Amino acid sequence: MTTADHVRPLAPTAGPVPRVALVDDSPFIRDGARLLQPEVDVVASYPSVEELLAARPDVDVVLLDLRLHPGPGVSAQGARGVREVAATGAKVLVYTEDRRRMVLAGCLAAGASGVAHKSDPVEWVVDAVRTVARGGVSVTPAVAGVLELAARRGALAPVTGRKLQVLRARARGESFKGIGSRLHIAPSTAEDYMAEVTRLFADYLREHSPADLERHLGVGEGDVLDPDESPRRRR
Image 1: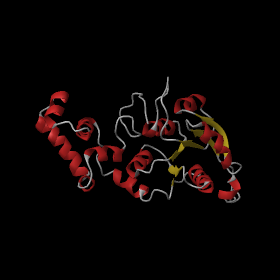
Image 2: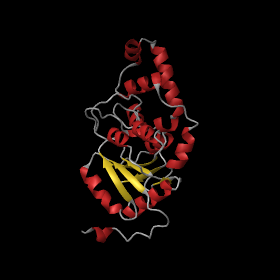
Image 3: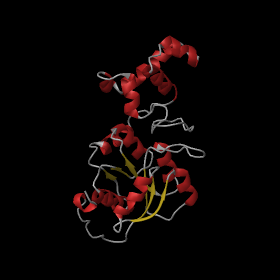
Image 4: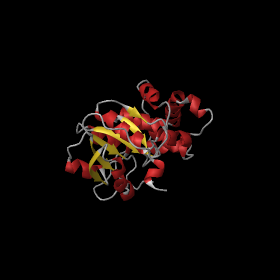
């Protein structure tokens, strides 16, 4: 199948052509960015956030993959990558295969202006780039309800600190006694922390385990919303 077989012609561009930098550790994806042209001007591509930040290209939008392999001097991925790129003043459009709504809502909360899915048609991604370049917000129709969930996140306390440590331990089957001993807290205190998490996500936990919740939130070690920013092997 050729490109023409599955990509319909793009609508003519209204206004300036957005200048885009792509961050993705897949050479295939970086090479495939040419499909966005001429409606989008892909001026540079990088395998890591760190290389993008070092180059500081003059672009309207950064198209950012969420999962990037770490290496020497390379550690930023997920929400951390979004925050670091957005801190430069760049508009960030997340480009991902991830369909977890809580994860994608977390990326919007971290400063992304939109989410495009790698299964989206090229013309939809181009439209998303244009929208974000104009200062708007664009979220893939492949993941319904992300904007509403992002708005709700403001009312939910983040699962961080001790609550996160206890959730991770319970996700791996550790007893409250063991958690307490390892974290130097009373077992009852560990139970209290888990009870707080349970109250926040009661509906989800009625039918899922703590391990499911950890993945659902994207906060497991090495996952894209992991608040521990130390580099480690991912995927």
